[in-house]
Image (cartoon, rainbow, N blue to C red):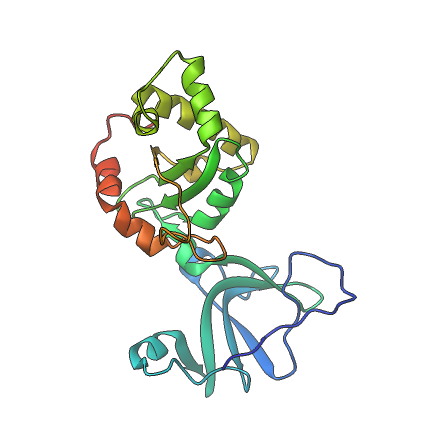
Length: 244
């Protein structure tokens, strides 16, 4: 069994940190040069590796997964969390990204899917969103669960009266206007140009834990979402006719 690697005092009212390491833990920030994260940055940054008596020796009966996520450095065994972190001046650790959520695009730049999704989830037009990037493409795409009230109002503003919710979501003019408004929100939230999805797809069903696309904590199940919308993703990258 694993236990906490960091702790937080009940009297500490600071935010944005997971606290310093507990006494039995050792935390190492491993350089990830491709993503630009290195311990020589100011502040020090890198992939969070954790060692100590509180860390499991591996996954139960999963030797391949254990070999993938556990590493030995200078004789010390570490668990590679997949988190990107940075140490603050007070010694506390701040988690700034997930390694698997960082995508390298065609021109070599990395973008953070989680950062983009967090910024766009503040948009009243959006109920949920999952961004996707391909290293062979120069732009991201986004699978979006639109807010039904706002999207219906948008359709009414344009005197568009599709016969069903699915028709509204797939109406080309509505999608173009929706993306334009989404981009306005993104720019106001200081997203960079290469962080703006080049294409979007409006999903006509709600994502829930019951449908298997979200965890019980309402987090995205990226792999399952990608599998479900595999053909949509392929079509978005294949058809450049309406890329903004």
